[in-house]
Amino acid sequence: AAGLWQFTRSTGKRFMQIDHVVDGRRDPFISSAAAAQLLKHNYEALGSWPLAITAYNHGVTGMKRAVKTLGTDDIAEIVHRYKGRAFGFASRNFYVAFLAALEVEQNAEKLFGPVQKNLPLNELVLVLPDYVPAATLAQTYGVTRDELRQCNPALMAAVWDGSKHIPRGFPLRLPEKEQYNDAGQLIAAIPAAQRYDEQTPDLYHKVARGDALSLIARRYHTTVRELMTWNSLKSSHRIRIGQVLRLPHNGEHLAVQ
Image 1 (cartoon, helix red, strand yellow):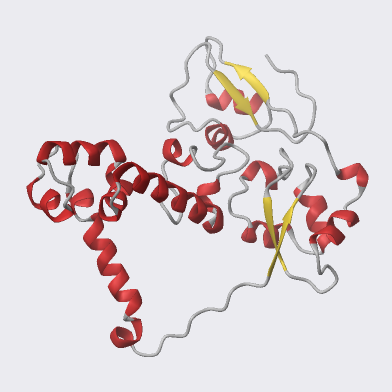
Image 2 (cartoon, one colour):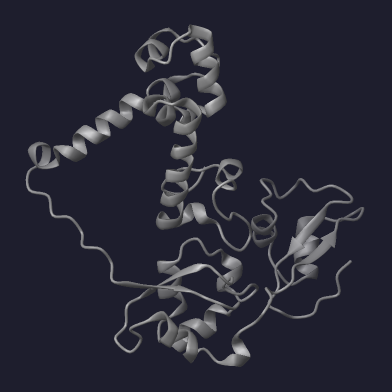
């Protein structure tokens, strides 16, 4: 699970882009919209907000099983009586934890004294009509890539190292600047030669007998860590003959097996 709303990859992919270019789970705006969609889906399936919220942790199928087993949709009855094997501490206490957090939020000053809330960030949201390199966008807008990266945590390392462009249609967030008071003005300032109709193509390597990640990384001038990230590998020692690995690159032509 990752991000503010702790989406797993499988659940998150139903509501947002999650791959080696964009991981929407890591952006608080994108993932919050996805969480709202998931909760709406849970409510439509279960007809009860306590069940829908609990299903955020336990899943809709699990909550339907609990309701069917006990013959009730009363969350208090389910919490106290349901003995499902996967209905452990986290699931059993998920709704009451939500109520506790809600109570704290609604009575913050009573509990903690005066609370000073942060003001919303002044940001420009830009939906690009083309694929654009991050370095080009940063230079055009007059910010560093690090500043751009801080505003857009969903964009993965491949975008920042130049292997991939910022995707067309991605809701890019930029720190507000006076010289660009609207998105159209900024888009017009991006050089035409740096606006692309397609994403940088993926390159691949098919694992052969005797291959190891360290050898593959050395061959393609990358690192084991990069290969693991690009291919969602959990171990640097587990690849198999015939497995196809996606390769990071910087737009250069590589001879790929």
